[in-house]
Image 1 (cartoon, rainbow, N blue to C red):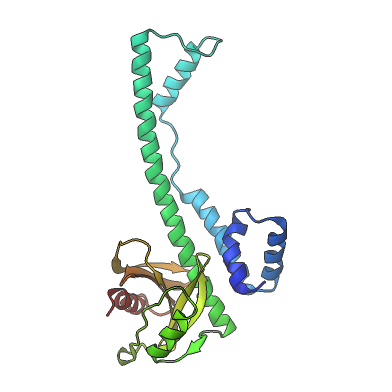
Image 2: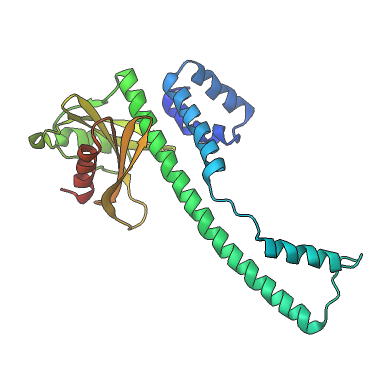
Length: 256
């Protein structure tokens, strides 16, 4: 098992959903691979954060009191005896409360899931960047010519990533490589800024929402800039300053 295969299976392993054979294969690979081991630890830490930081709400005391009172009035048959009009009022209120709770739960659940997916991908992008740096496999195709890098990547993916060189602004294109993000192969553009290496992961944008102004996070000491634009989704990862990284990702997302 290689790093690409292991990285794609690590989220499933973290959720405890791999069969015994696959789990053993991944664990065996992790024992001799520091980047994959670090990614496994990052996923475990993320699970703990979600459990400790995701919103959790307890029922108000008034609601708890109503439930206890209802249980106390319930006969042994388990069916509370209520006049027809009161039963209808109770059922209507319960249906409304249930619908409201469902809507609230849906919004909260969607927000938590969106946050988790975004955080997972940021963490995975940092792991890819770290692995490439440690293994000295920064590029699969080394060239500052976008007409060389773009065809090389396009021939190995089911999409054609935009490739630009910003050497005139001190951000020369170094080359490109293939990585995996979210369990799918993805194009990685490699730039250099002074002594810093910048990886920019790019894949087709799902949907039409465009947010070319990057959002910034920090993962394990690396800055991560995420943006959507020019029909693509972009993740920039580097230890370069946040303003330099954001400016580069913003230019790519604007198609400049």
